[in-house]
Length: 237
Length: 226
Image (cartoon, rainbow over all chains, first blue to last red):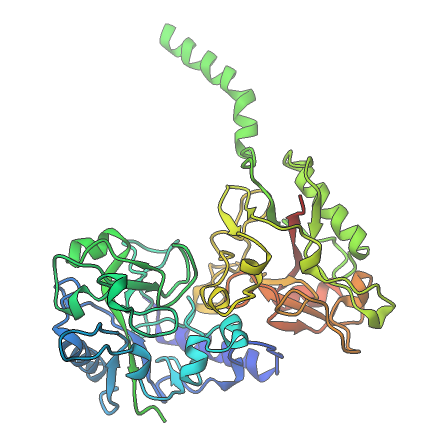
């Protein structure tokens, strides 16, 4: 839908606002953006894997990130899905925040998403209050398009799989299933999701707003999702 | 013919009730809005008293004047004080928009006083931050590529406040001279559409024409304090 000149104009204008040295007391300064297509290290998958929350585990999800990134011309980096898993048998829990490198991360238009893992997750109260830049403007897929948001074209696609708490860590097993059985179930279970548009549910969290109704594709759609998830490049420079 | 006459009669009878329907009655819990219009004088709101009166007047126009409305604004010592923290002016909550959507449970939720609250955020979003008429404020999508043709981005909301809801203590102007300047001055604003609703950057003028050139419509938040 969006033509390239429009995208370029948008970037120039956004960067321009930063160049005026607008003083941001909080949050990520606008003037740290880079050119579109540079340092690309963050996107939301343009499509899910088609089998609900069965992603073939973390490996399958990582491969999906890598494939989409490669198709869009960003395959040189190492991509990881932003997903947690619960402890299972001998396998310890995996925290999404520990999988994605150290940052900084940029979207395909060059907008800085967050400088550090701490900033991404709001580890300090000031960071948390300022927020990262996963907001409606910058939360784009690898093609530079925006998953459907509240108030925009439908069907809604704003439930983004994470299986994580707001701090980016896995739930304990006492919390019940939040990862659709570590991303292998397309039926029973539930997955914690965030909202890339920050709207709806009990909070405004990008990574932990509410659990899904179930793990099937229809279940994800029913609560406003499409089985999309966040991908980050671990070796972002 | 009879049915046509009946229809016409019904239409005529419906007219008196159709007019109020354009301005739906505010929800019973209505206690938060963004002003649909500013004072008309940029950063000069007639001080806190003038700003409160503006909130009260706009609320009255939609039949919600039984409550005690307060502008979410701070004032600074540097301009002769008194020092007033916006967060201390607005009661204890919970607050709801004109349609009854909850905005925040209490002051701590509103301001993210705890780490978990700060991470999760309050519920001021572009969908809930409505004016007293129930309309979304222009420019909620922020980005030029998301704007509708002719849409004006008015997402800078005047607060003069730090992110925790308190007044600035330095010697710079953050409040258009305690809301009396419509010329020189500077004012701290927030973005109702994220990531930060009450304190994200400064606007460099208090003159309405200059403010409108940027992304502020010189609007502000009103809360019912009771």
